[in-house]
Image 1 (cartoon, rainbow, N blue to C red):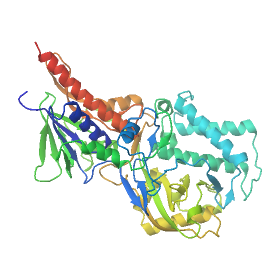
Image 2: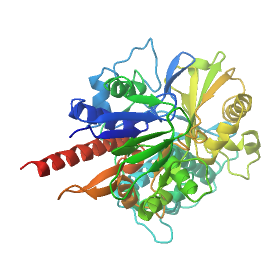
Image 3: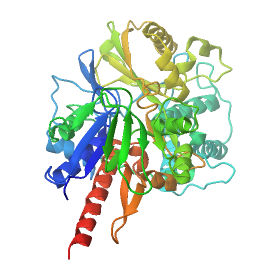
Image 4: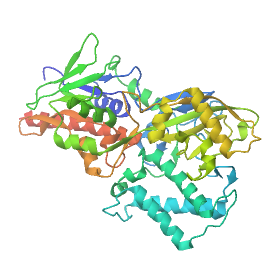
Length: 504
């Protein structure tokens, strides 16, 4: 070929950098004219390692979800990112605690044998059933939330209804409800669904984590990103280049990218790999209709089947709230699982609404003076709009509703993520919503193709990668990684096919 095929990757997150890394490595950097354009002023996307109060923390991606066979774990091990040092502490360096202290609003410690352990066992059994694909799906109630609630009702019937007082003015039924809800709040964080009734039950059986432990990365998730980017030639990654519109042609002509300002407002490419978030794609659909000024526009518009997949799939907001504690009790703060009072309880007035669907507050590792709470959905968005002073006041009121008044621990400062309001993401990660299915995730991965080359397949002009394009591993960094490998492989196979067809 007289000229190298030009490939532009949109987005320097996990998916985009993986695709670029694979294309560069497979062709020894010699076949493609490769460029990665990133709208922001840093690489990493929804991976962002930071520091707070002397501890290493993750503002975005946190866990390797299973280490056996995980490509993320393999990369982290190869580059020595897993071997940490206690002198440089990091988030969840000691794993996930198995001994939470469950406290009901008002300060009553919940009995582990009577309530905490049976409800935890019930909830995990229901979730395993949903994830195993053997949960019965009702046509009128196809959401995960309805299935979980049905399981709680059946549990109560099996042991017999009782209004026995279990302390602090709580009935056994209300206490079970509150503890069960705390597990549901944690599930909202895992899935990003605002309401679990929005989460499609039938699709849960297709989701997969890797086997083995779930761990964090001692040297930070950003080390994976730095490794992928570091293998690319200098000047391959261009920061501060936000693509507003992609102009493509059904006849297979070059793709034209239109940027938001700058000295070079356009760029052409033979192939474009789009790795922007599902939130940005959703916003782009509004733009195509003339109603939204954000997002990524396609001209001509995306095929209707892909537009419908984008609309149907869920994309939620999850944020992390870090709190630095001061005072004599800072090193003894427990892993606090919170059982909030029902609306009829007067005690609820002390706790702000945005904290009332937070399942737990805990040190980021045992003995740390940095605490962490996860918020999802509407509460996560409200967190983004608050001032630090409002957050400190709300957290203090919440802790006061659960811990003894003699505790001298106090919140000194906070740090929170803000994925929902960030125009480059507009959310955190995807889920299969009711009305959607795994087929929509497959549709997300389908490229836009141009004219055929000889007898081969149509030329993949615009390819799509990112966690929301993987049927089994959506919402995860390894899903993003695998999607980047998939799209790089698609292009490499295309050119091998073209070369074979052209060879006598």
